[in-house]
Image 1 (tube, rainbow, N blue to C red):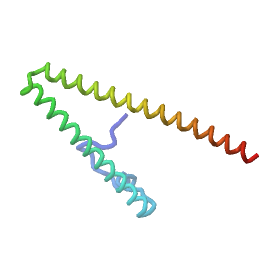
Image 2: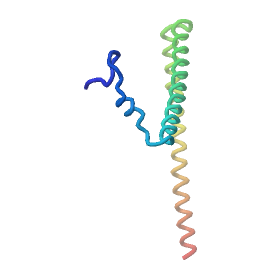
Image 3: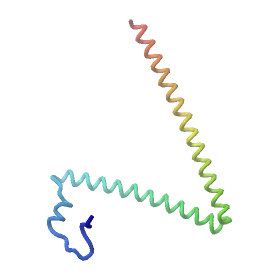
Image 4: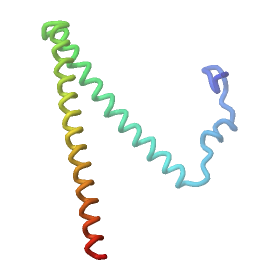
Length: 113
C-alpha cells in the first residue's frame, strides 16, 4: 500500500480537507476531547512504563543483578495470583448473591399469588 504522505510530497488542499472533514463544531470538539482523553491515558501508560523500567534498572545494577530481577518478577507473579484469587472469590460471592436474590424473588411471587 502506498503511503499517503512522505517527507518530499506537498500536502494537497483536498487531503487537508479530508483530514478536517467535520460537519459541525460539535464533531470537532468531540474529536478533540477524544484525543485529549487518549493523550492522558497514553501519558499515564508512559509514566507506568518509566517507573517499571526504573525499578528493573535499579534491580539489575544496584540490587544484585539478574537474581534480584528474577525475585521481583516472582513477587509480581505472586501478587497477580493473589489478586486473581480475590477476583474469583468475589465472583463466587456475586453468583451466590444473585442466586439468593432470584430465590427470594420467587418466594415473593409465590406469596402474592
